[in-house]
Amino acid sequence: MAALDTVDTAILRELTQDGRIAVRALAERLNISRANAYNRLERLKKTGVITGFTAVIDPARAGLSTSAYVTLNVRQNSWRDLTEHLRSIPEVRHMALVGGEFDVMLLVRTTDNEHLRRVVLEQLQSIPGVLATRTLLIFDDIGNGG
Picture 1 (cartoon, rainbow, N blue to C red):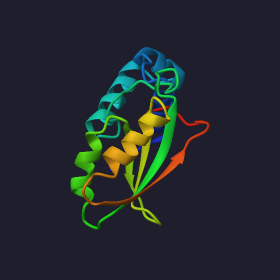
Picture 2 (picture 1 turned 180 degrees about the vertical axis):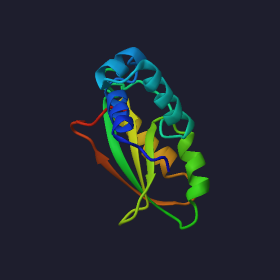
Picture 3 (picture 1 turned 135 degrees about the vertical axis):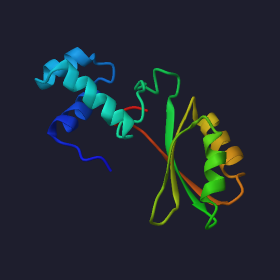
Picture 4 (picture 1 turned 180 degrees about the horizontal axis):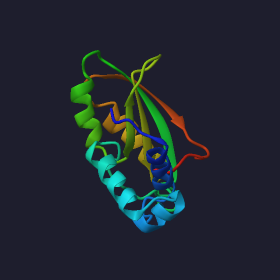
């Protein structure tokens, strides 16, 4: 685990707000030299703190007007095989192994309710090891996108 100081934390905060910020602008905002900003960025990438850069998409404007959290109860020890199946479903935007009353939580984004129904009933429930699903429709997405 990389030890992060206040400058590293500030760099991460700025990148979270604008992943396309130029090194020069980043350095100016943090009152550090461009060389320092560049070296820190490279170190954060090399140590795996920064794993990549991506665009934040507005799902509704991208044609994905229906979103839901889908929880799965799965057969014990099926997580490794299950993740391969889940990664092959493009509508699954995020997956997490969790503790509690269910085992897996998925963020699913689709074009409409019928599309969501097909993903849940035809794709997710047919995966070996999936014992049960529960779908929680998202009415208003206030998060960071994705």
